[in-house]
Image 1 (spheres, rainbow, N blue to C red):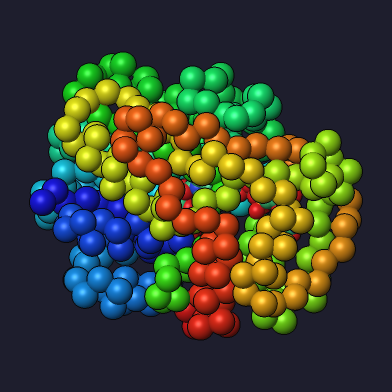
Image 2: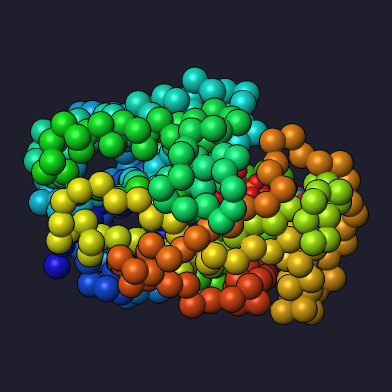
Length: 337
Ligand code: NAD
Ligand code: WQD
């Protein structure tokens, strides 16, 4: 079976994807600098899968360390999760975001090229669509983004398109994730944000467990069914499975492929709160507050392309997403600590 290097494989999406890769019998090597994750994740992945993983503590910006990994292993493909991901933080320290996300990717691709490894899956984001009409489709124009984080994703997409144009031996998938939530149903791995969460679902579960007092719903006056914003929430395990399908595709062809990974359905913030309450029996204390700068009223995916070309579709509904979030939260009230 092919050997896959997962950069940022100890993170939220990376850890769930490594579980699915191991379940599909891929050999997995994880590289991470633990900027936003902890070593405990690795033993949890091994515990779920009953398989060993090879790990390197390495920063993707460190060329010498990357070369060592590529010279010690025969790598068939790379999934590049490693990066910084907070929209708010990216407005405060944009240079760190460009350095990590853009320079890190260039460094990785240079080393891949040197070792003739030209199969790459890149973690992109629905944020590259900006203000397009919904549902978002892969062939829509991109780049109208409102923050440095989103710009790093757009720039890396453009760099990878140029890379393929320069050398058609590359086989690259740009996966545009929508809003991943939930956790592995074992409750052993999940999302543990540092400090106060920026994202909706981790915030809700911290309110439910009593670590935060109240959720503020950012805006109740949008032009949507109930006045709150609409997003395409996707179970992280469904998202993870999309990566194994994308790998199958890029390992059997060359080209640059772009896929939305979303459910194709939108839920409002109030619907998410209700779904969480209904599926867990927990009350979520909330009030409606002002809008958050930069939020769009509604977005969701057209997920037909991934269905047609990868044979991938989501399995888990919103109730399962909420239940698994709560299971993870209850079993790990202090995260991995
Ligand atoms: P995460 O922070 O949980 O995981 C990222 C991992 O990369 C962490 O383990 C971190 O320690 C590591 N990392 C960061 N910089 C590194 C570096 N320079 N060298 C080595 N390791 C490094 O984030 P996530 O939610 O799992 O996201 C994974 C990828 O998916 C990111 O690129 C993110 O931008 C993208 N993405 C995430 C979302 C989301 O909502 N979570 C949505 C769209 C796209
Ligand atoms: C969802 C909805 C908020 C918190 C972000 C990034 C995007 C991608 C996914 C990486 C919105 C509302 C939230 C709160 C709230 N990440 N909300 N109260 O903004 O859709 O997407 O994460 O690529 O790039 O921008 O996700 O979870 O922050 O918000 O009312 O305390 O919940 O206004 O409508 P978002 P989110």
